[in-house]
Length: 421
Image (cartoon, rainbow, N blue to C red):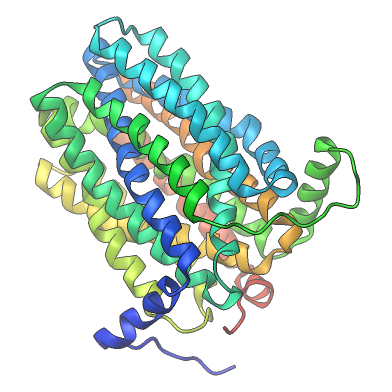
């Protein structure tokens, strides 16, 4: 198979994205989801800042992250089963309705200064439970809105907007927190979630899920079937192992940013917003590169090599002597981690059976969102005792070692995952 290099001309770089945006259902979906993503990042920064103000503790930030993300470990795989059964659109609308109510309650509690650390943790647990069902629906919806040949580019474009939201959201959150308080930053999600429901209902026509052979819902049986499918797949299984390592050791840093921004560099809420937005700059550039590619040859190597690259950059971040150098390191880490995340997700979506896609994405998101909760809890707890730089650097080294083990299986993985499109 001959290698085909991506075009670097401006026309070639964006032609793939123009083709994807030519599909109206996908275009409407992006229009509905982008404001929701911006508000999602605003809320995350705001609730983390409130916890930091209440406690001044990295360990409490780890507990908060654990409260949001660990329910993902428990239920996202089951959410994937329900997506395969009920359909991605229906599941997305139900869960967003729950989040409208929840985010409104959280904003009111913070606005009336009734928040306590344990109350924030309790409400965040409910949020995590809801997101466990929404996330596989959101991920499974994308490949249903475009032809198979455009799935990779659709995932890349969706990632660009996700990371653009990660750039805009924290910046808006930092400004909003400084000017009018965190409650307003948290309330934004309730508004955009309501808009998402309305737009999804009126504009986006998602195909119905494939008919199941069994008439009754068998969650345990369907989940076991999905796990067996993953275990036997010589490409998807090692990608999920790699996702576990990167999520536990590297992506946990997002949950601990208040410790670096204010606890180490004394940058305040505005600095937290800048630091949280910095990875989006590199992520957008990396996603543009992926969108310029033609075919998927070489993507397995990119997914694996991105992990040690991210580890080195984040060790540099942990020991950065200044706030702005830390922001630069985070921008580079945003690019390298996106190479791993987007490529892994795209390869799993295009190589998995359609009847298993919801379950595969459920397992992927269970790891992608759940493992950082455990990582933040462990690293944050150790950071309160030994300082953040040492424990976090050791975690980065561990992720690089896992990538070295997965690298040995790259040829077999490429045969199962990479297909010329």
